[in-house]
Amino acid sequence: MSVTLLRSSTARATLRISTLKTASLAGLSFTRSKVTLPNLPYDYGALEPAISGRIMELHHSKHHQTYVTSYNTFSEQLAAATAKADVAGALALQPMLNFHGGGHVNHSLFWENLAPTSQGGGAPPRGALAAAIDTTYGSYEALQAVMEKALAGVQGSGWAWLVRDTVTGGVGVRTYAVSLGLLLLLLLESERVCW
Image 1 (cartoon, rainbow, N blue to C red):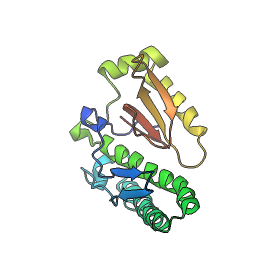
Image 2 (spheres, helix red, strand yellow):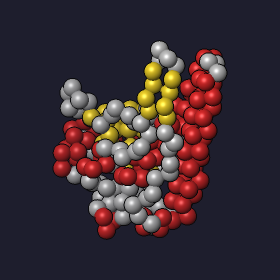
Image 3 (spheres, one colour):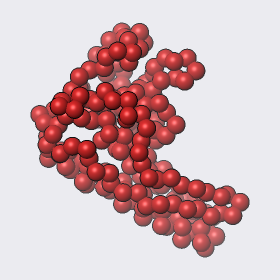
């Protein structure tokens, strides 16, 4: 695994995403806003040589865009099913909404956490995060091995997350399809690490 350009800013802890949903189960009414592909805070080529500009362009403009387009399509289908009181149809759409919504949220976090070296990226964890990693895993390299193993167990598209336990304060590796409700410290998608 290669360590790619990492942002150390704590601003990444809060995802600025306009995908708020409201739901009323009693009336089976849903209000969903369309999601959009976020603009990157850097040029596609800004992370070279760690990640090629072409790979960044494809990953952002094609791969992530597919999650956005699909989520919006399934949201429209859910609204139509709900309008027809098609409960079975609405329930059948939930896995696709979760998958594509999760892909969108995860990728949005991914982009927010990458940074060119000129903006603080490219360095391994330091400070309290480095200490927590060393205490729990022995070293950053050992953590990377644990994350790779966790990711290998994920079928299809998946993410491994380093999260902080809000009760104990310790860190742990988890695999989740969607990151909402977690205090994200580090994530791994394929061969890319960001925190």
